[in-house]
Length: 185
Image (cartoon, rainbow, N blue to C red):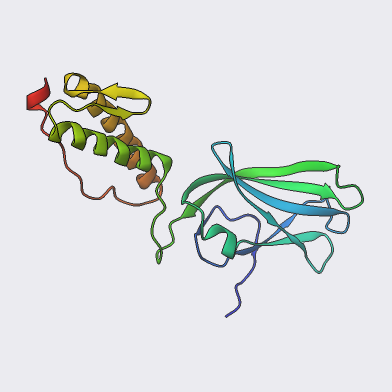
């Protein structure tokens, strides 16, 4: 089955799906410029997808199926970056916008930085709770049973961030548990 081409950058797509779309820019016709579709998140580069010139000579076609399947779901910034065919040092950024990459339903959800930090924080709490005179390091700080409350606060903040991320993807936060803190007040 052939994937139908959309007109314009989609506002969302699912990681792993074949996505094909066409963009136009009258200031940068495909006969004179190359186009790269650049994705970034929080200032970090995610992917650069080169476009191909459409048969009409003025539009660009972008296919992102294989590139995006490995990206973590979430909100991304896109930029259309044009490079002059005759002089590769001449570059211009065209339209920019935002889109959402939805999780691949057949894959495993890639953990965000906040999810990784939450797992590390929970591991540190578990270590402190299981050994009465242990010291653990988390996020550049040392914690003992005397200041475990600060570690609980960090865990709660991270949990809120993770919940917000998952809600933004349309996913529930799943199960969880709360540690009873009566021993360390």
